[in-house]
Length: 158
Image 1 (spheres, rainbow, N blue to C red):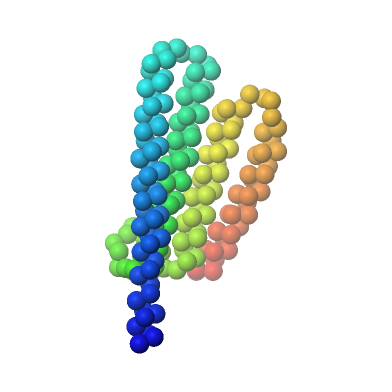
Image 2 (cartoon, rainbow, N blue to C red; image 1 turned 60 degrees about the horizontal axis):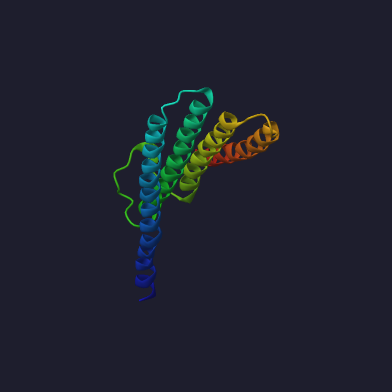
């Protein structure tokens, strides 16, 4: 009896699978709308200046950032589904998740990309008033630590 209950309990993971999937879809749709509005504002504005182009570029970089977060949440959804519900889900080799370490590795890779986009956004929007070098060094330390985690994680799998 207990064995059956425990074996069936894995289906409770459908809740975070659905939640993360819906969250990723919502992020992607919402940001798609925001990006369309950014395009329309640029066209409606009609002015071409260095400042207008910079504002437009920052809007696009911010959209990329949100899309990357949406993709990370989607990867978590797919990973949880394949780990707990159906391990025969046809996925590309790079997306296959065999354990929680694989899922964490996928997440950390996307976090590194999001942090890189965050820094790019700050550099594009930078007007010389703040200390961007300190921000960059802080991000570099985080990215270095995450890269070290990925290297250790990959070495453990081989």
